[in-house]
Length: 243
Image 1 (tube, helix red, strand yellow):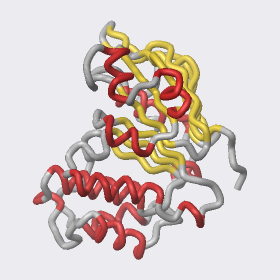
Image 2 (cartoon, one colour):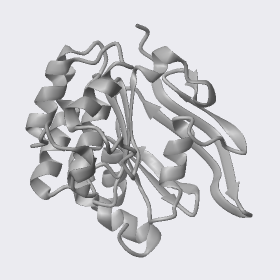
Image 3 (cartoon, one colour):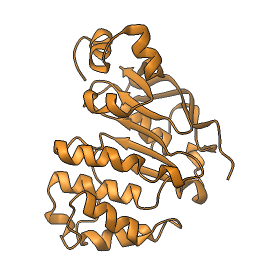
């Protein structure tokens, strides 16, 4: 497998809804192996950007690629290397948790039952529970297991820990990086979150959005050194209040 310099690329993405600009000339480059924190207020365009990147929403103009494949034409091989979690879990409520995991797993060549069982155990997710009976937090855990059980090369996560308690958030952050030593290339992660202190512990890069535009992007260490601020303080300086 060829290791690309950039796992995610976007150039000049524009998208409007009913005359309102949701994305305004958004350009982005995520190096392979980077862990990128995507931050911004509600309505900044984070979810819209992620949906465009995975091909669920088509921009009015511009171009993006995931793992070298155009977002609008993701092929089966590329889809098998992706993990995506939307802000609202899109689940099948009539199934039990393990039935749901097995069903989705059949679409991924690298899916392994033992990995899925281990993820459920780590996140304290009951495999025998009915999906329709899950709490919001457990629905989010299930969505995370579905995204991770096939060991994706690229994860795109929209507020993945918003409904989890602090202990579950900590365990999830650890799960993102477990097993990396056995991979031919490190996993690339792009995640949006308003929990800036959680992001600050794990990200290598930061992208700040406001009103559909990218305000700032770069390596977190360099940004911190040049600004001398925490991620939350930097966000406040750019936006006036925490995300």
